[in-house]
Image (spheres, rainbow, N blue to C red):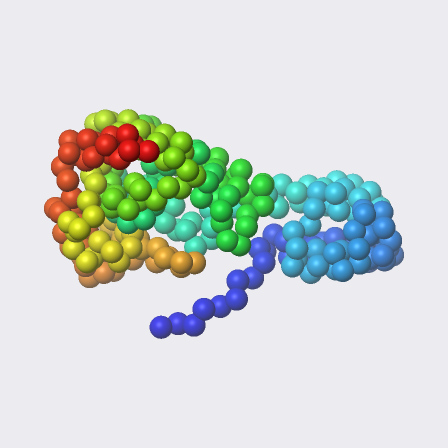
Length: 272
């Protein structure tokens, strides 16, 4: 087992902050003077220059003008936008985008590819630690864009198995969950999507171990993806993939049929 490492601030923050410091020093401007003009305290300017805080557009504009950077500092704001996906999931997102077949099991949440906007916003608004508004908007847009591959690529097979607990989680309240459940039924009607429910008490203990995703890319590479609290692993080793595939296969055989699952989801929605 490897020990966890402290997450570093994004490289873009550190590079941009360093450039602000270099231009400020070259122009002979103190942190106090820059802070007074931009409306920030000394420690805030210091944190931004050291990359511990994201440099704001306001600071970039003021520093650019005071240091006569001629737009070079202002241009950095394009690289300071929030990442669409957390760093630990980007390798999986790349594989998912190239997938010709994807099989996803979720125990507690609706799979990201099937979430309504209301559901995903409820999840992101309750993130801990909290996300800023800009990051939430960027990630909502990115998740909605991801979902388009289901209809954009009708020859790709998507299979989902969802544990009953995810259907009854109450994310966002009854109205959000009801809309989410009816959305599942709509997506489940697509010819390239199979959607099954694993009822409580029917599955093997493997179903309680957490989510897993199996996918095959257009290059016929096979991956298994598992995710937990603040961690995720994309497995390419054949033995690991085989183990996850066997586990998924057992879960799937114990789930309701596609028709039974659609009826089950409807009944849960009507109970709300």
